[in-house]
Image (tube, rainbow, N blue to C red):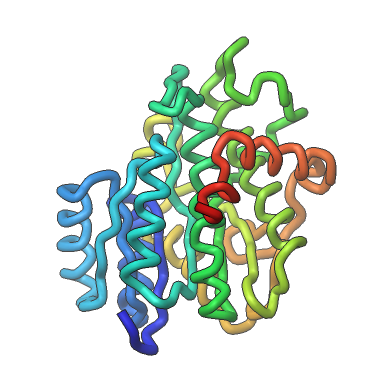
Amino acid sequence: MTDDVKTVLVTGSTDGIGRATAAELSRRGMRVLVHARNEARGRDAIERIAQPAGGERLELVVSDFTSLSQIRRMARDIRSRFDRLDVLVNNAGVYRRSRHETEDGLEETFQVNFLSQHLLTHLLLDLLRQSAPARVVNISSVAHFSVDEVDFGNLQAERYYDGYDAYATSKLAIVCFTYEMARRIDPRELTVNCMHPGVIDTKLLRSGFPLSRGAPPEVGAANESYVATAAELEGVTGTYFDKQQPIESSPLTYDPEIRRGLWEVAEELSGPGREQAA
């Protein structure tokens, strides 16, 4: 598909903040790639987004983030269908109270919230770069501040599992990934930032924190859309935003050994370099 319309991929866009963000960016005239775990959910999301947004440029892409092979398949599909990708919003996420393994034999929270985002970003890197200046926005959480240490011997939670700890660690990992990728890439080509979109009333919040009450998804969408599109953020990279405010993240995320260690774990478990060379 060849034209001058800016294109954005919002992962996890069938409900909650993701769907609201897709709708907001569609209202702004962008082509939005609506990501879903399966086609039925995706078609339903597109219908729901199109009605209030009036967007005509909605495209479905399908992948279950519990499957690395499906991530690779979706990336190939996107590269074959589109000749530009201006913004990637890594919004998909899960919270599991008990430990689940994916088809790849990996702990689900760590895979969906970190490894799959790491892999997808690498597989779409060339497409993002050829659309320069492009942006990656990784969705983290204020929960990452609660991590006291990164236990590299238990990243798969095989020795013990706590749902909140697993979620918080995955969100700390995505901040570390953001900083490490930003360090490696020229910001004139691609900026990489991360953010806490706010405490938002979503299925994830209700499943993980049933007594919590959050703001409407549209509030989180406004914050994600700001980091994804604001003109004043052009060239800003390697930054953590609390909603729309740049702040310092957890001290652990500034440790170069932790950042490199998590990067190497992701490379080993997901192998983006091998896929790009294939």
